[in-house]
Length: 228
Image 1 (cartoon, one colour):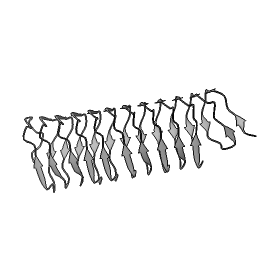
Image 2: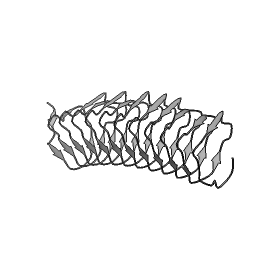
Image 3: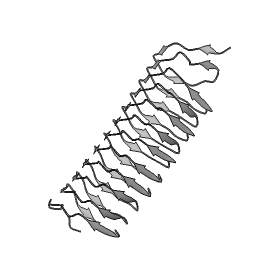
Image 4: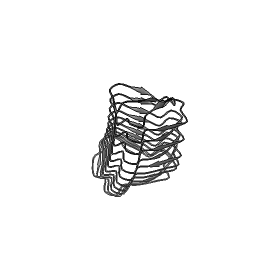
């Protein structure tokens, strides 16, 4: 007979298939999924700490808030349809990540080698955005990145509403679309990409074109620390 867990758990939880989590609504600490095949907590709304998915298939249909970080690791699938806020970082790992209501990530977003990253309502990343080797990174409502943007070897990076980047921008070899970007707090390294930033007016650091195929910055007015 499965051990039935309480509605509110103050500490950490290491998911165990022999326990019944059907009543759990709040976890004060972190949730560790480990090597469980499937993790289901149908009534869970809040995790005070972090969520570590391990290699599990994770389904938390009522979860709205993670106070700490979300680490997807090698999870097969992560389904958190009502999650709106992650206080720490989001690491997508190798998972297929779909968070349709997520609006805020307090820390960084690292896409890793994720099969798919779908965050259609995300508006703010407090830290940096590292696209890794993800096939496509599309964040249609993102307006602000507090740290840097590292496109790496991602094939395509589309951030149509991004206006402000607190740190540097490294384009790598990606196809980069940032039509509304006006401010880069750090430097701009174009890598080997074709770079077009039609509304960029302010660059805090230097501009390095390297082996870029094409660089178009028609509105850039700030004096560069170093030349091309």
